[in-house]
Length: 222
Image (cartoon, rainbow, N blue to C red; front, side, top):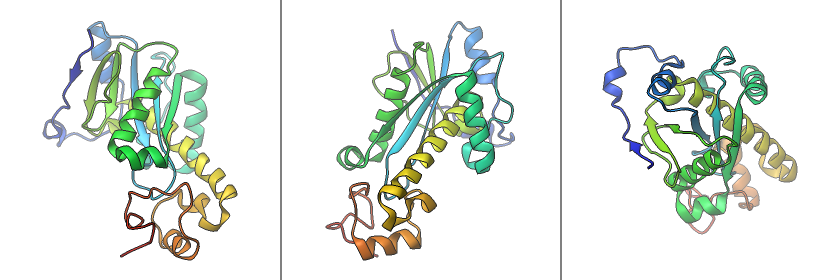
């Protein structure tokens, strides 16, 4: 029967430097929970584009060196680690597009993408470590929310890298299809350039109309 574990308190770890390792996974593995997947998402904050989630089951004997929160890595580091993760781990990717985000809100759309990413793994995990305070609902296994998980668990860090690189590549492609918005440069975030493009051209199908400053009748407002 599946179980869900509430998130741990960050106060327990305030005095410790956050660097991801395999200790959370190893403790769970020794208790009989294996395989273990990490899951994370990228793209909750932008005004446009999907939110992308990844689920990763690492090979304990072949963990790429240098795994970390994707936000702490350079583009070159992320790209290199992405290729290593794909080559050595079991990976599944899912996304929720702008319309689903508008219909369900960004949190629910993110958790739904994470749940689908986990479901897409060829090997069903016994435990899923999810970054943040929320456990994706509907999973067929135990889930554990890990606050600052991408800085504590290499499985979650790997998922964060896969999600980030995948989404960035999607937004580069979006920039080719919708060149007026410069998606390849800002990945859909609300930069001054992006906001000016929306003022000049109006929103496109990739924009999240439930997000300010787009929320009111598709018009940019302050």
